[in-house]
Image (tube, helix red, strand yellow):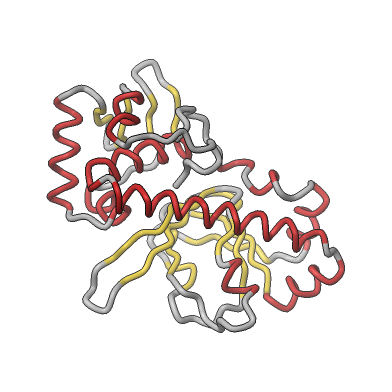
Amino acid sequence: MATSCCNLRSNRLTRFLSPDQLQHLKDQMMWKTVEAGSPVFQAEDPAEFLFYIEQGCVKTMKTTSDGQEITFGLKGGGDLIGLADVLSDTVQTYGHSAVAFTDTLLGVIHKNDLDALLVQYPSLSLAFMQWMALEQRIMQTILRDIVLYGKPGALCSILIRLANSYGQPTDRGIRISLRLTNQELAHLIGATRESVNRVLCRLKSERVISLDHGHLVIHNMERLKDEARCEDCPLEVCVI
């Protein structure tokens, strides 16, 4: 895991798409604002649209049959949502749900328009493959941390990823711009709220982190790295 606190969200897609390619996509998009807490799409909805986050944050998640929630990611500006589902010939529905975590501006492109663009500009296909490969690696490393390093290690890993994705350097430390409840953090690692409470209380008592008006502030990144058994993943992988 990397230790930089830069916000990687504003330019993730431009790592794969040229300005012209991104503009070709945007030219085909409809734009909509989704209020915080409102669904972008639901699991099992027809996978007909690709979503581009211009501003804001979207939570991707799945609810089990017994009502338990697992959060896959908190996607921000410059991210795509639903790409793998829309491009699949065998999957006809979205495999997860997406909900606006904050007020969000989305660009929306229909599957048919996307298919036409891929025919007209074949280089987009390679860019999308590279994007999906990166997303797969991000998810693999998150699952690795959850399975191998226990809930404390997984939570410390998530805090590092949040800092890399939404961190703002301050005189006191790295302030995470998103406000997350302990329950929302628990959903990110498949834990209970109580277990997250215990780990956060310990980290606060040891002055590794603190709270600033509901925002987590990280004071000791090296300590988080030690607890997460950091493997120094590339920075673009160590995001949420």
